[in-house]
Amino acid sequence: MTTTNTSSISAGFAELSDPGAELGKLLSGAYPDARGRFGPFGGRFVPETLWGAVTRLEKVAKEALADPAFIDELTYQQRHWVGRPTPMMHAANLSARWGNGCQVWLKREDLAHTGAHKINNALGQALLAKRLGVQRIIAETGAGQHGVATAAACARLGFPCRVYMGAKDVERQQPNVQRMKWFGAEVVPVTSGDATLRSAIDEALRHWVGDPLGTHYLLGSAVGPHPFPWLVRTFQSVIGSESRVQMLEQAGRLPDAVFSCVGGGSNAIGMFHGFLGDAGVQIFGAEAGGQGVGAGLNAATMASGRPGVLHGCYSYLIQDGAGQVARTQSISAGLDYPGVGPEHSFLHAIGRVRYVPVLDADALSAVREVCLGEGVLPALEPSHAVAAARAWVQENPGKVVLINLCGRGDKDMPILMKNL
Image (cartoon, rainbow, N blue to C red; front, top):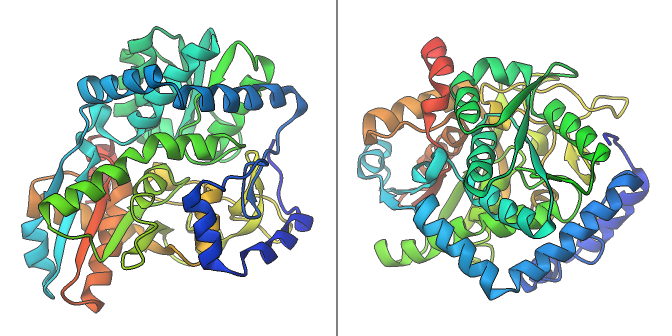
């Protein structure tokens, strides 16, 4: 289930010779194609035992998303349980502090139920699980926000829930571990491999192989075999569609640049889809630069990786010289992952989105700045996006920037108390 370096697929990069045409295919719905590919990226690299489960999921998802009754139920739960739409906030104090004539806007996904964007996808897939007729739901989690969201959705809809979490992340994200348990989830620490998000996904996939029809694997990021990258993006695109409307209503214009953090990339792909068709909007993904350049010092997949296969799809990933998945490092559990969603790899390859590494130290300083300046405690993950925006406006005066504040920082208090 975890392999790397399929060089024969790389011939598909010839498909990306016309970036404008490739972007048009994405915006028109031609990508993902019938093979689940965004150009050469994506696909389904799964054992035969899971083939029926992933193809059934795609079929049921497409039927549900075309069913007004499903959309009505999803919309009702989003409004009355999740709390959508989430607010758009003008960060006047940050704007003044950063200077250079900039105007900073924050999309407040931290105010969604359970404290992050993860609930958008967890709710959507849990509703799909009802249509699938499964008996239980499993999930993986890194920072714990997806685990909390999945546990909450399962409690709401009446599913037993098991969450796999790397033992390293269990230790550094104790507040979220306790929240999952309060929602009735069984939390399983994973000690194999690097004991972070990558290992948690490995373990969840192993469980799914053992019961592919009675269990739904509620994958939390825009990674994995098709249809997961498309499905997660579909449920998270509410972020970008709301943001576009709110910017026009409140700022009277679209932003000059949009920033989101990128680990696997679910919050970012949801935000980006609201603006991909706007040529005047620059788009940036902030990756985990960790301690800097060097093997095992960061989790900046675009900056440090190359294409290969991980967790069922062909995408960029961090590898060693032998093509094996390399260890990563980030102060942020949610970004500490050696891969990235295939749609992000596609957007990187055609140049529509620029992915930039952000050091741990810069993310920590951004946490403090948002706290003191706006009275908001951001999670470590979106603090990477805040730091990237802060650096960009210093070289681009007079710009309007939109940052996806995709989660709140309560979960990070043990880390923040240690490092600040």
